[in-house]
Every structure is written in C-alpha cells, then in structure tokens.
Image (cartoon, rainbow, N blue to C red):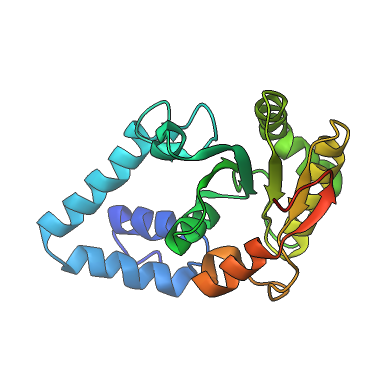
Length: 210
C-alpha cells in the first residue's frame, strides 16, 4: 500500500479498522469513495461527523438517541413494567421491526470485549456500569425482566452474569426460548423466529413469562 498517496493510504487504513473489513475490501471502498462524486463523499463524511457529535446514550435505557431520553422511553404507551435486555441497538432494532413488543428495553452496549477469546471476569468488568443502571431501573418496580442475549459464547456468558446479578435482587427473570439457532445473532433473525422465542420465553426466577 506504500505506492498510494498518504491521504488515500490513511483512508484505507481507517476503513480497514471497521469490523469485517479486510485490506482488499478497504482498498475497494477507498477507491469507490475516491472515484465517486464529491458530493456523495462529503455527504458520507458529514453523516459520520453528525453520528459522533449529535448522538448520545439514552439516560434510561442506554440506547442511542438524539435527546437525553430516547423515543421509546419517552413513549407513554409503552409498558414500563417489562424490560427486554439486549446486547446492542442492533438487537433492539430487530425486535422493533417485529412490531409486537410493547415493553421497554435496556441496551448493554456491545463494547469492552470482542473476538473469540472471551473471559468471564473481563466481560463482568465491561458490563459493570450497565448492570448497575439496569438494577436501579428494576428496583423502581418491574413485573418482568427478559434476557434477550445472543445464542453464542458472549451472549451465554452475559446471560449468566445478568442472572447472577439480578437473581440476588429476587427479580422476576425470564430468557428467550432456546429455539434460536446456536451461534446466530438476533439482528439477523426474522420476525417470526423472534416472536416465537419471545412468546415462549422461559422463566428463570419469579413469575416471569407474563
């Protein structure tokens, strides 16, 4: 890549830092930007800038938001007695596309630990802040907390940590039905699969599955 001018090289390196983008893909994307229209490229740059400057975490559920309280938490028609705990906004979006969930969410945030080598204590430390925030919400009074983690190694460890932390508070817990394909991600699954997993959720503690 040393034959490229430095600005192009920096763009390729930056794109190569994105998840799932290898060196060749980064080069193709960089040349697409270079060879495309200037307005298109600048619009992309502005979109990235606005995402970093204008978006923030909802003070209640931690979902990405333009305001201090996201649209879902501000919606008075949502059932605040039900909290669906997801790993990231991508899973939240999948459940919202389903169109049947009328409760609220809590987004843990997919950060801190990545890759295949996941250790329980590292994950516990990375989730500590959001687990504390979730506990504070639950203590204010909820009927059920549904743990909707992905059916993979990280998701299973996250579920164990949440069950441990929330279980000490004797909160009504449930988890999605285990019909989800092992290793799949919730964001990729269709609405019928998610709806069935949610409707057939299994109680972990307390009444749950209401």
